[in-house]
Length: 139
Image (cartoon, rainbow, N blue to C red; front, side):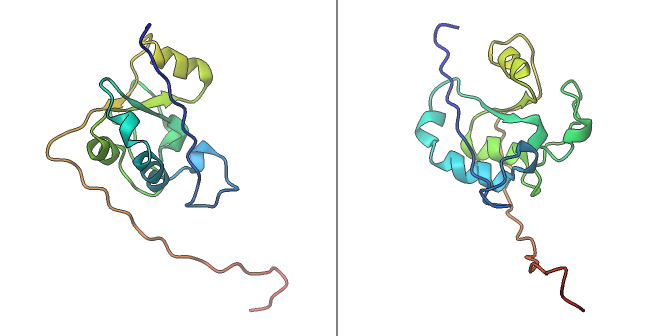
C-alpha cells in the first residue's frame, strides 16, 4: 500500500443545520454538495469514496455482509446515484475506526457500489419545513 493516499473530508450538515455533527443524521444531498468541490481528487485512478454505515437509513440493522443492505441516505438519495454521478465506487466504510482501517487496507470487503450505465438519477426531495413552536403557546 505504498501508493495509498487518504483524503478525509468533513461534510457540513446543511439538511439539519451545521450544529448537527452526527453521521447518522447525514443526508445524501450534503455528501453530493461536498464532493462536487472534490472532483479533481475524485478523478484520480483507483479512487473510492467511503461513507459511514450510520449514514444509511437502515443503519440500526446494517450488516456489512448482507447484499440487500439499505443503500439510501436519510433524505432518500441513493448511494448508487452518487457512485454513478461521480463515476467512482462508493463503499460503506464501517462504524468504527478499526473497521475503516480494515476496509482501507483490503483486509475486509464491505458493501461497494460501482458506477453503472445507465446512471441512476439523483432526485432531491424537498421536505416540508415546520415552524418552531414554544411550549408556552396555546392552540
